[in-house]
Image 1 (cartoon, rainbow, N blue to C red):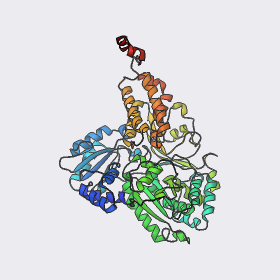
Image 2 (image 1 turned 90 degrees about the horizontal axis):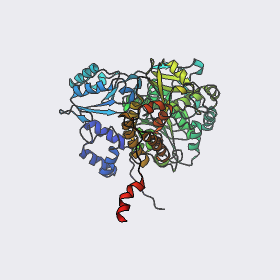
Image 3 (image 1 turned 45 degrees about the vertical axis):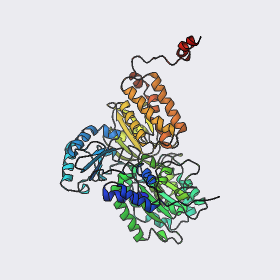
Image 4 (image 1 turned 135 degrees about the horizontal axis):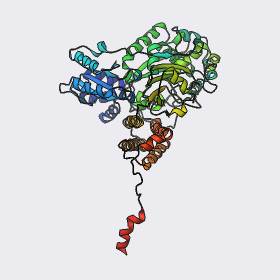
Length: 574
C-alpha cells in the first residue's frame, strides 16, 4: 500500500501565537510566509486560523479585551459592564475603536465563575468588575500602563475539604515525594496500584485511569505520549485552574508517573488560552524539574526512563476539550473531533498510543501512589472511590472549590455553600445535568449524578428560559459545524427557545425540542452535539408547569393535511 508523507504541523499554533503577539493580529504577508515555511497552502493555514476564537485575521486592537458572557456573568451585571466597556473604549462588541487602541470581544466562560463579572485584557485576568473599575482600567491602559500591572490575581477560594485523613487533593505536598516512591516501583507495580485504587477519570467520562494507562503500554509502538488536558472549557468549571495555581508540582509529578506507567516518552500540557497568565509560572516549574533531574534523560533517576514535558497553548475552542479534537489541535489542525475508528490509546498523537487525562485525574493519581490504593478506596462509594472537586458558583453565599467524598448528596453540597431558595442546580455545565428540588437527595457518583466538576446554582429569581437561551447561544457558537445533527440542531433549539421566550410557543415546540435533542444525541459526531440538548430535555422533564406557563394562550393550530392541500388541484383536473 502506498503511503504519503505530510509536513509536521505540530508547531503551527505556537508559530501563530508568536506572529499574533508581534503584530497584534495575523497579517496576510506573515501568514503566506509561514505557510510556505511549513509546506502548507495559505488556504489550509487560514482554515486553521479561522477555527480558533483568539486568532485574528484583521487588526484586533493594541489591547484585546475578552468579556466573559457566561450565564453566571449575565446574572451578575454583565450588561452594565458591557456598556461601561463600550463607553470607555469607544469600541463596539466584536470590533475595534477608531484609534485602533482597543478591540472588544465577548467570549464564553474564562474559568473565573466564582469571581464574576470577569474579563481578560491582553490575556490578563480582571475579576469582580464594576463599571467604575472598568473605566479606571481603560484609562490606565490609555496612559501606557500594561495590563499585567493592573490585573487581578485570581483567587483560589478553597471552601471545604473533608477531615485530614480523608482529603485527597488539598493536603500538604512535598515536591519530589511522589517521584521518590515511584523510583522504587516498576511500571507494572504502578499500574497494579492504580487499577486497585479504582480511580475513575475525573473529567466526566469516568474511564478507569489505571486501565487507560495499561492499554497504552500494551500497544506495540516505538513511542508513546501522555497529554494533560488543561482545557477545562465547560462553563462554570475552574477546579483545574485552582489545582494549577495551588499544586502545579503535583500535576507535573502525576504526568511523570503516568508517563512511566504507560511507557510514554513525552508529556504535553495542553493549556487553554484563557489560562495563558498561568503559562510562565508553569514553565518556570518545568524548568526547575529539569534542574532537579526529575525530567529529561533518566527522569526521576530511573535508568531507561527518559521523559520530557512541554506546554502547548490552545487558542480558544470549546470542542478541543474532547480528547480527539485536542489531539487534532496539538497536530496543528482545526480542533475537529476524529471519527472513533481508533481510541487515542491505540492511535492518538502522531498516530502513536496516547493517554489523555485531565488535570484532576493526574493529581489524584499522584496522591494514590503517595498514600496507597487501599486508603483511597476507603473514601467515597464502592463504585466511585475517592473525592471530587466541585467548582461551585452562582446563587450561594460561599462560591469556590469544594472537595467532597463521592456519595455526597446534592443537598449536602447546597448546605455547605449556604445556598438558599434554590430553584435549579446545573451539574457539569450546560452539557451536563439540570436538577430540580426533587433531586436534592441524589448523590454524586458514577451510578447517580455524574459530576465533571461544575456546579452552578440558580435561585427562584432566575428565569429558566433565559438560562437555556444562554446555553443555546453557547452551543451554537461552539459547534464546529462538521455534522448536520449538531449544526442544524443547535440552531433549531435556539430558535424554538426564542419562540417560547416571546410567548409564542406551543405544545408542538416543546415536543420538537425533545425530538431534536434525541436526534442530536443519537447522530452527532462528538460529545458536544450529543450533550448540547441535555439541559433542555432535563428542564422540560423537571419543570413542566413552568414551560406550560410560557406557552401562547392558543396553542392548537391546524396541521398539514394532504387531502385538503390537493383539493383545488383534484377538482381542476377532473
